[in-house]
Image (cartoon, rainbow, N blue to C red; front, side, top):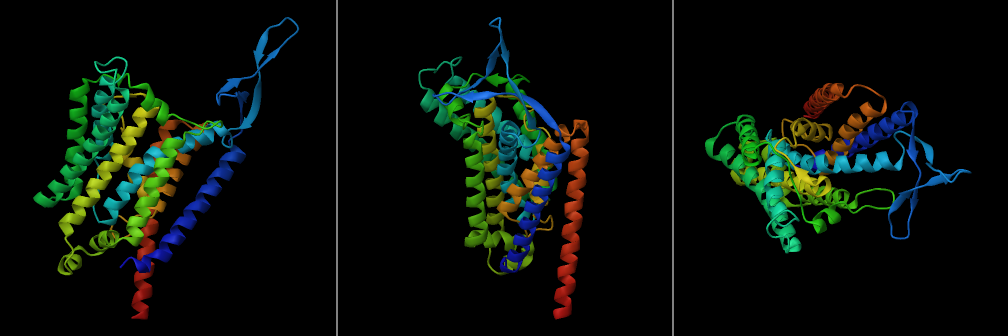
Amino acid sequence: MSRPFRPAFRLQEGGLVLVILVLGALLSVFGGSVRLPRLELQPDGSRQRVFSTDANGDKTPVFDDHNKFLNAQNLAQLAKDTSFIAIMAVGMTFVIIAGQIDLSVGATYALASVLGALVFRMAGPEGGHADWPVAGTWIGALSCLGIGAVCGLLNGGMVVGLGVHPFIITLGTMAMFRGVAFVVTKGQSIGGFPAPFRDLVKWETAGGLTLVPLGVMLLVAVVGGIHLARASAGRRIYAVGGNELASRFSGIRVARVKLGVFLFAGLAAGLAALLSLGYYGAATSGDGQGYELNVIAAAVVGGASLNGGKGSALGALLGALVIQMINSGIVIVGIDQSYSQILIGAVVILAVLLDQLNAGWIKRRMTRRG
C-alpha cells in the first residue's frame, strides 16, 4: 500500500531540501555579519582565543567578522538544536502515519528527563554513589529510555483499551506527566551528573560540532526510514493509517500497531531527553515546554499527513531542520522571538493545506483514470 506514495515522498523531500537551501541563502544574504573571537586549535584538540599584544605588553582579544548564518558556531548550534527535535519528530511521524496523534511528547520528554536526572545525580559528585560513575551512567540512560517507553505504552494502552480518541488521551497525559515531573522535582533544577556521561555527549569536533546528538539523530532517521520503507511492520503502519477498517479485515492486528507507534514515540522522547541531559547537565519540570508544536510541526512539514497513511523518517528530519532554521532565522534577522510560534503555526497550517490540495489532486486524477 505504501508503494504508490514513494514517488510523492521523494518529491516532498526534494521540495524540503529546496526550501532549506532557499532559507539558508536568504539568511546568509539578509542576516548580516557578527564579530566573533578568533579561536586557535591546540594540539590537545581544544580551542583557545587568540590575543594580540601591543607595545606595552597588553593583550587584546582578536575578533573577525563572520556571516551570522554561515559560521561554524551557528551551524553547529543549528545541528545540535535540530537533533533533539528531529529524534522526537521521527517518533511522531510513526504515530501520525498510523492515523494517531500524541500531544504529550513534550511532557514525556520532561518526565524522562527529570527522573533520569535523579538517577544520574546519584552517580555524580553530589550523589551517594559517586564511586560508580560508569555503572550509574548506564542505569541513568536505561531509566531515561525506560520512562519514555512506559509513557508511550500508557498512551497507546489507553487509546486502544478505552477506545478514546488519542487527542483526548494524550491531552490528559500531557498534564499528568508534567504534573508528576513537577511533584518529583518540586520545581527545582536537578544537576550534578557523572563526568564521563557529560563528556561523552558533549564531545565535539574542532569546529564545535557535537557529534553524539547529531549521530544519534541520523541513526534514528535511518533506522526509522528502513523500518517504514522496507519492513513488513512498517507497511502495516501505513495500512492502518490509510484505512483502519480494511486493515482489520485483512488480518492486521491494529491494536498492536497502535501500541507499537506510541511506544516508539515515547522511546524517541526518552532518547532526546537523555541527550539533552548530557549536553545541558541539568533538568527541570519545565523542560520540553512547547515541544509539542515543534515536533508535530516538523512531522507535518516533513510530509506526514494528519489523515494518516503518509509520511517518512527523512521528511521528519528535514522538517525539523526547517523549523529550527525558522527559529534561528528570527534571531539572526533581529525579529522579536515572540513571533516564532506565530510563524511555526502558520507553517503548519500551510503544510496541512498543501497536503489537502495534493490529496484532492491525486483523488481527481485517480477518478479520471477510473
